[in-house]
Amino acid sequence: MSVTLVLGGARSGKSRRAEELALAHQGPVVYLATGPELPDDPEWNARIAVHRERRPVHWTTREVPLDLAGALAAECRPEALVLVDCLTLWLSNWLLAGSPTSQAIQLLEEALASAPGKIVLVSNEVGSGVVPATAMGRQFRDAQGVLNQRIAALAEKVELMVAGIPLVVKDH
Image (cartoon, rainbow, N blue to C red; front, top):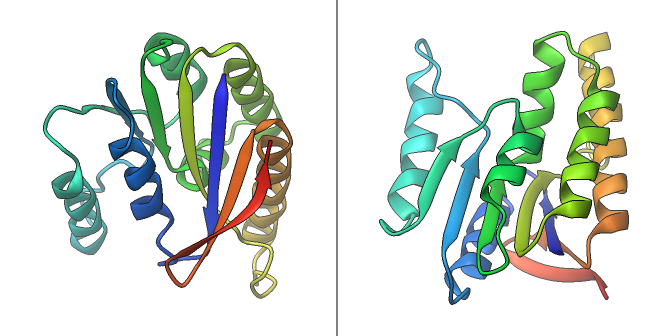
């Protein structure tokens, strides 16, 4: 297993950086997209379209709003690189579904620990912003902080994107 976590704030360049890492991979690439299209949100759907347009046609794409652990088990192979964009949307999907995020995080950790090949995970760094005004917002921010800490602990490499520039936080 080789896990790289790419963290950053909104519009920091984290998805583009993860895509650069995937483009450098010599074998097959599987893109696990966690943000589903929304029927009543054309702006959101336009963002998804931009991501889709950047992907090479030879990459395999799967939409995985909830069962990320299952998708990793199915798609990770020694010769492949799996790019997950992004953990933040995946976690919010769990929260909005009313499911315990602690269970989801544990399932993800277990899947990553046993996955062969290379994995690049994108996640938002939410701890540097303002305190959310709602209880659900604070619950999400806290769960996202826990998720980022736990994934960073098991990752071999962690990069923090700042204004499009990757800063290496961990490399071993």
